Image (cartoon, rainbow, N blue to C red; front, side, top):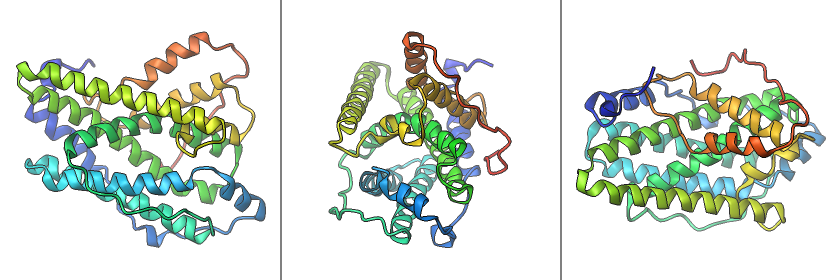
Length: 292
């Protein structure tokens, strides 16, 4: 079923993407998680992943950014959904802090983030950055699960977190489209230019960080560069897995809602130029922990 352009920006559209987000929230407390004992080999693998400093710092800053917008949003329906997303981002940060503390993973100290001055456009930037990161994180999670890089009792903890990220990016692309539709016609070109600039900056930043990561100079951009930690897979196989996982995780939600439409088309275009090597890894779709 196609999405009617005239429907985007309507009250029904707003209600649908907000109600979908709120109704699919999964309650849990990070303090209640029972972290499994890991073998010496698995623990060494966990500590060697070059992600922890960047992950903890990013999730902490993102939580504050989203929470700030939730507090400033005047529309009560939007405010409820955005505040809930801020709570979930804070929960992600808490989970990472608990994980690193439990397994003795050092995290460099960093100053507390400051609230954003422009909460709306900070959320736009953060949201589209999550669209980029999540696409590759979905594939990395499936790759790690398939390769048994860590025991299932450990990796299963993060499946609901990845599904929350799918909800977050679904929300942000619909929220941004709603915001654009509500912008006066005379100002929409300015909105479009600013959004395009924000997306371009995210793409350039992620590409630059991935190059730096590959040279061993940075932890940033790890979701695009560290899939080789899970085994010897071709770039084609990894990107095909990312596409499949992206479609699976977003496929749970109402087809009337917009999906992120930037990374997947670029990846499909890139696949045309990549040589055929090993087939894409197969993932068991019968996962009882998936969000319906």
